[in-house]
Amino acid sequence: DVKVTQSSRYLVKRTGEKVFLECVQDMDHENMFWYRQDPGLGLRLIYFSYDVKMKEKGDIPEGYSVSREKKERFSLILESASTNQTSMYLCASRSGIHSGANVLTFGAGSRLTVL
Amino acid sequence: ELKVEQNPLFLSMQEGKNYTIYCNYSTTSDRLYWYRQDPGKSLESLFVLLSNGAVKQEGRLMASLDTKARLSTLHITAAVHDLSATYFCAVYTSGTYKYIFGTGTRLKVLA
Image 1 (cartoon, rainbow over the protein chains, first blue to last red):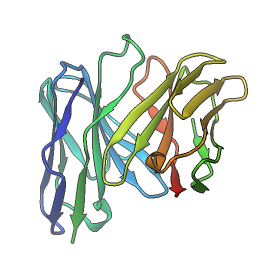
Image 2: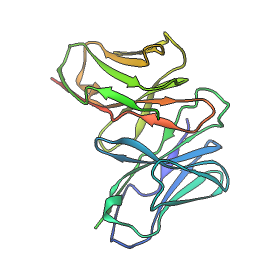
Image 3: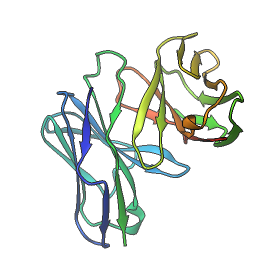
Image 4: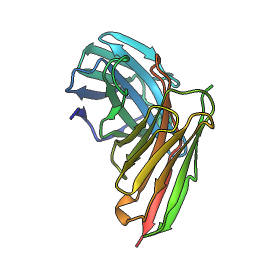
């Protein structure tokens, strides 16, 4: 089975701090995603990466950046954390766009609190 | 813009009862997914529905897709406590990377 691992389950940061959320997948998937999950809003796409060093903005990229230097690793960066970025962050991956049912496999999530 | 609406948002039901969760979406889509999320945990894939009339079943859960009505249903038969979770549907269009998720249905099965 595909495993998607998010390095931090719970983080507490202060306003203005730089925050790194790491995600690693072990099945050689080309595509990786970062979502934000908030009650009543479902999952919203922050950024998508379709290959190494390639990225696309999702629906809510403001205040975030990403890095994909290696195929298995996709990092989400909050340059200057703000309280409205308190949320659950979910990483997901899938194999390339032309293969199979395109099911997303999710990591366990990183719950970030910004004080 | 593709929108996905689930209802109900909250569902409390007795063990042994049947119920249906509805997922409506606003424009044409190639695939529809159902996921389950337990509290504090990640989303787990339940079903992928690929064509009109598709029906998938696993245990007490059955999902169906009507692409003409832009509607998917997740039917729960004889609910048990272990089914308590939040269920999400998501739609996807081939050739894109966008999965649009519903807001989720929080299901609580009472013993």
